[in-house]
Image (cartoon, rainbow, N blue to C red):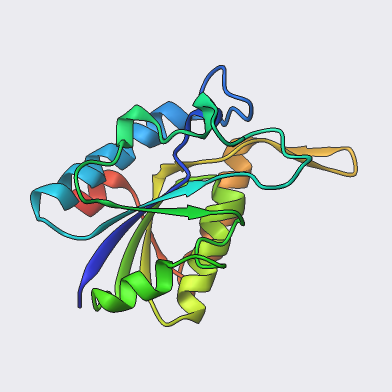
Length: 180
């Protein structure tokens, strides 16, 4: 089984003073960096996913802004693959699937941002496409959500989305458990 690391949308707009600050983005990015360094040390495939907004009503990840750039904590190096996406699902209208097939990848290690959006949709799509996935839960970040005047804080959102993925769609691990 060949493994690849998929780092999704760890971009500046999700950090302090960004246009869509998430809860715990700095800590999550540092955990993602730990996983990234392991993959670099083992010379395993790494894919950085970068979301660039195309909607005229978009408020973050705007082209040619500081906020759209991949955060320094997980900045791509050398020949690490960077794939641009325009939708929450990293497979939708991108070259991700073809790239993974070309490398004979069958297992994905996923981390990034936002847990309730791009991590969730990409992990579910990976399952549908036949990949075995591990999501590093503490290397992901999300935000508070609200529906009909009721609010779920980011911690509750994180638990709900990761627990919904755990088992069927992915195995959820923490950074320390993954590095063992």
